[in-house]
Length: 309
Ligand code: ARG
Image 1: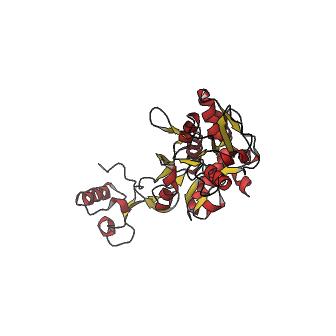
Image 2: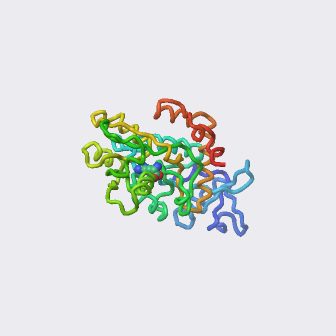
Image 3: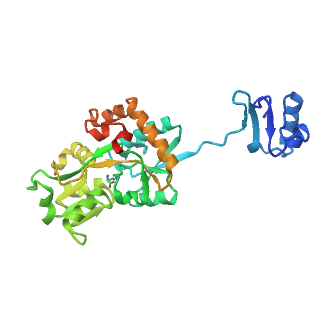
């Protein structure tokens, strides 16, 4: 069963003596030696995980059997179209997903996406339940204390959604109103700052679409959330009769892929991948697929590494 898959020269760190006597390098260059290997296997004396084969091109010993490649588990709160959502088949799809798939292909790593509620997402990363997060996560100084980010890959800003009939024209107008946000987002932070930490007029939801549904049914007067998601929701729910309001008060935001604090090796791989997909046009292709046009904002259009330096 194993013969044939063996290279002409094989050694095994656990079984040097059996293959060719007492030397530290055992050569199994002949069929006879193959038979020895087979018999050792049969008698469970040969630990295959430690078997090596000689690579004449590289002039060194390499593992005979490579351990299965690590699959990086990517956490994403998949209720955030067009960045991440679940299709009818339950598959996680979206802009963020395609960006990370393209980055992973360049970085030579395997990824698997796991739907992860936003409220537990940073904890899941800290616990090691997720290796990275792609979830339209805004890079903030506060978050940088506990997690590491790649270079930015997307520019965003907060946007206000209200009913068409609303008199709201600017962010400050929300002071006397009931405002819906997704818990723990940058939208939540902005509204908390405006209305006050102890305000009971802030209605917090576990997802942004839930907050927007509440706006539709009149439970809140406004929602503050990332522009991309609000624009997408409003466009796909014409029956909601929404309008959106921008305000210069909102600080520009940038999304980054998050990794566990100190995982510099992974950040580097991802940053290289991001730079590559921006250089070869695949980032722009994904961007255009989801947003109908190539990125215009400087941050998103510039190479990721250049944007953060
Ligand atoms: N960009 C915002 C933040 O980082 C909201 C992100 C929410 N993402 C999501 N997939 N629910 O706070």
